[in-house]
Length: 103
Image (cartoon, rainbow, N blue to C red; front, side):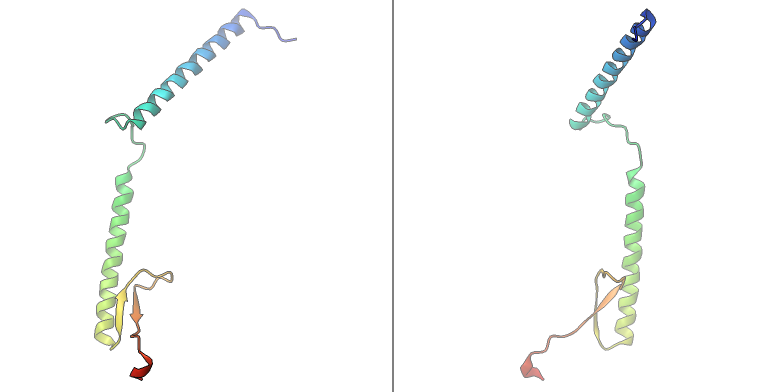
């Protein structure tokens, strides 16, 4: 059916050699990364930018929480705390626990 000509055989050998070289290089890179040697891995992205953005966002939320807490303390006689909320609330009211005998 299909017979290999000398040109095709040469191309197949070249492909096999290239694939073997790529596999060898891949293993070498993986091994050097696993050893955590300096300069072994090339960063493909800037993780510092994302961390900086997250930090700035957290600082902004903290400032908003502080402002909301100060406003609540000035304009209310209740007690409030800052805490992350599933509903986006920056501060939560704290209700005192009353014992049955205190009523």
